[in-house]
Length: 329
Image (cartoon, rainbow, N blue to C red; front, side):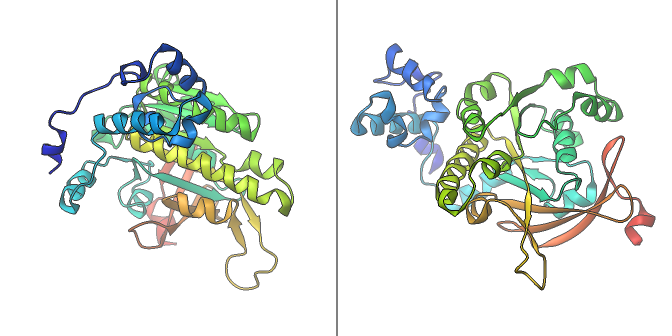
């Protein structure tokens, strides 16, 4: 079915190649954050309205972009074959990889949440290095887009991890495209305008560390909750679109909040409520252990993996497997 559907499909390299999109319109679309045919294929007519495009014409342009990307109905057996081509990125710990079904999956969002010092940013730094490894070593051979909202990114840490894996630190750092977000709107703007950067730099990993920090501090009180959740929803769906369009791994970190009304079970919950819970495909809770560098990772949500728990450690070298003695304990 899919092979027949692909016959006669026209390839479009840039926005101007799409019928009905001239230089003036493409300029307005780029100002809205649509830089590539892939981003147009996953757009909605409503999102194109600010560019002065009527709904009928917007739908026509979107359909044309989609037709070139073979976004169509397929049989489940074909979907199974497509799923077999999904790549996975190693965390650096074999046990953590096994918990995640073989590593972090492309075309989905993996969320790491936990208290301060639980290792969220450390995992992000490690992923920046690991994604540049060859596929034989668990990498994707690609670059990184890193959006930092809490000023936690450190190139010195990248150098340490790269050296441990036998990679050239200068080259690893050069393959990381970094941006610091100063507000929630700035954070959204960066991601909305990221498609061209992703395409030009061979990005295979998109990181937002942390997802909710600015939203949490700027939208205070119940009267602002609805607006905050709407923006978070839009932001996360943009991230999903980018991950799917470019076959990239998407990683977000999330803060937690205490629930004093919970007397039994876990009283710590991730920020963002149902919006983040439904959009993040894989959610991992990180906790500190009493045993120094040991961290506990609990898989709390996945589309197809069972809940489970494992341990790993954070050392000067980065994310590593816990040794047998600690594992047995």
